[in-house]
Length: 153
Image 1 (cartoon, rainbow, N blue to C red):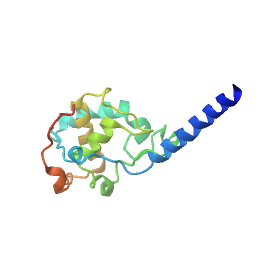
Image 2: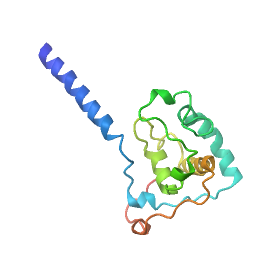
Image 3: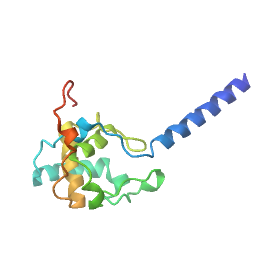
């Protein structure tokens, strides 16, 4: 019986390690999600609404200014992204940022059920403001095809 428990524990450790390694690669974001446009205008009102949400849900890891240097950042591998890196942020579409916030990926949690869709889109605007990135990039042409089927909320 002890042997079975030991083998079970070892199996869990190996599987957990394997899953951790899989999450270190680049985000895999569906083309339809990359093509999503932010329905909210880039206004002071939307940025002001997002700021307390960011402070409450994001700053412990990403830091108050978005540099990835929050008080909890050292606990995570991979470490939180530097949201002030304009070169990196300019490569992401609004849909990609929204997807990352919505779905999460270890160690980042999913905010699909914790924040409304409007709050997540407001965070996209706020994150962009941290990098002073200006206009988001245009999605690849193949991603601009209208999505058919189910809607994502």
